[in-house]
Length: 81
Image 1 (cartoon, rainbow, N blue to C red):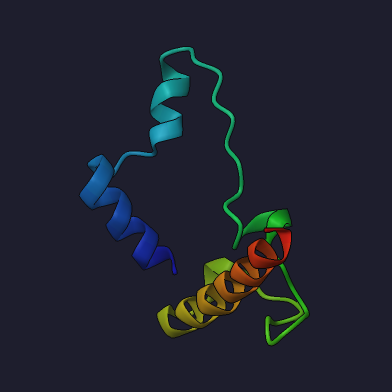
Image 2 (cartoon, rainbow, N blue to C red):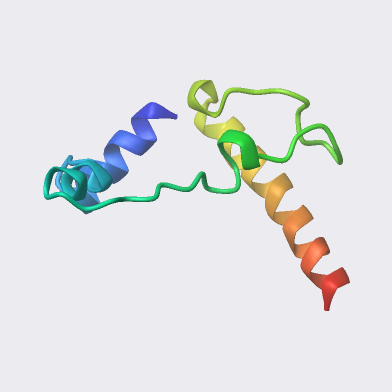
């Protein structure tokens, strides 16, 4: 997982952490966990593992968890509508 994030940062941000660059310039930078990571990550229902560390997942695991979470988000939005 770290390799994927490192490659993304290199391609799109020249290897820099964007939030850090703004902080260095004196800006306050809120950094929100994306839905799959941190405290916001859904866990333990409909095939989503009960516990996992996103930073240690393989690329295939990331794709699988991404698919499971997106399918739950889609169903949730359908119910809200």
